[in-house]
Amino acid sequence: MKSILLLIIFLSFAHVTVWAQNEKSVFTTHAGAVNAFTRDYQSIGINPANLGLRHTYKVAFSFGELGAGLGSRSLTQSQLNKFITAIDETPTSEERQSFVDAFANTNALNLTTDVTLWGFSIQIPKVGGFAVSNRQRVLTHIGLNKTFAEILFLGKNASIYQDPTFQDKVLGNEPIVSNAFSGSKLQIAAFNEWNLAYGITVIDKDDWKLAVGLGYKYIQGIGILDFVAQDGKLRAYNAMSAVFGVDYGDLPTSDPNFTYVSEKGNFPFYKPAGTGHGFDIGLSAEIGEKVKASLSVTDLGSIKWKNNLLQAQDQPLRPIQSDGMQTFNIFSQAATVLGDGMLSYQSGGTYTASLPTQLRAGIGFSPNEKLDLGVDFSLPLNDVAGNLPEYYAGVGIGYKPASFIRINTGVTSGAGYGVNVPAGINFDFGAYEFGFATRSVNGLLTEKNPYVSALFGVLRFKIGKIESEE
Picture 1 (cartoon, rainbow, N blue to C red):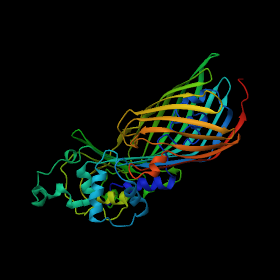
Picture 2 (cartoon, helix red, strand yellow):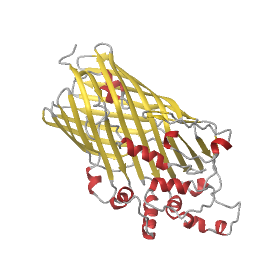
Picture 3 (tube, rainbow, N blue to C red):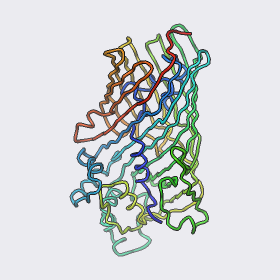
């Protein structure tokens, strides 16, 4: 079996579809704070109740909102650049050791992508707001202990393999994987979502309004890799669509239990490795037309992975033949090293995994037409591939120096990226709107704790301006 742990597959997908930030591909709202401010189809995945509050336009639609976030809490900017600009170079012995130290961190690498291929929403007075969209997500978190980092960069020369158990080929005394890799997480998930959401105002008073909302998503699981060694337990499985070109060797023909699906499908209608259903629920309020409040729970539900599925139980660590990473293509090299016989996998069956559920809350304040202030908070409610590694909090400010321009900035913390200063600009000409942003100005400029992000919105249209309450 070749390249079982295909980390490169997911990251190749991420590279093709463009990167995104923790807070979805929402380019129009205030940097650092989106929960209370999103409206129309951009509320999908954030808070469907926002659809029920009064919008400026009856109809909104888009054909492309893209973005990215890639950061590390332990690598330097120079080290991170090696994996971007020197991908074919071979690490020196000194570099190998420096990367061992850098990757022995709970937030060694975090990457999220979020691409809304198209979105549409309509608001009908007294009925509420409806929205649909197709969205693709790739979410990655890598945090390793020193043993795992050593094997990745040093291979068979890692300290653990110098133990007499391995040197003398003494069988039966090898360390258990969950103990050897304790505290390590390597999690990646790729989803293709078809979304439907609805929100309606249920209380409409002169001085305040309350809306409720529900979102449904049919999810195609394009691929997943979930390796977690924690608290004396090991969770290790992976399943991926044939679109990634996985080479399973003779497994499809030799193992009748292996549910092999070779059909690839075409973008965005890939043949999935699993399917599932998810729900978003939310409450939103407006107080005195100046204060907005939002509370939601997103990604309730699960995916059943059944095609091209491989699972591993906790077991003795096996020796490998590799010398560790041969180039700075960390994703392909990690696949090679980790697929070099360290684990024995079982094929077939099914695996049901929860979606990356989050609690989201936000407050917005608009003292006048030019200035908006917001606070956001998101908390992961489970530890699964695709969820935040920790809480996310942000403060956002939006200012309009002119009627068609808004400048956004703020401060954010958490989600594995540390403290960052986002910035963006949005151009709104009424019927047409576009903008771009970064989630970390300081992450682009500093050597320590680098964070590279980009956010773009193109071809966003709005129709039917609402002049007053109907």
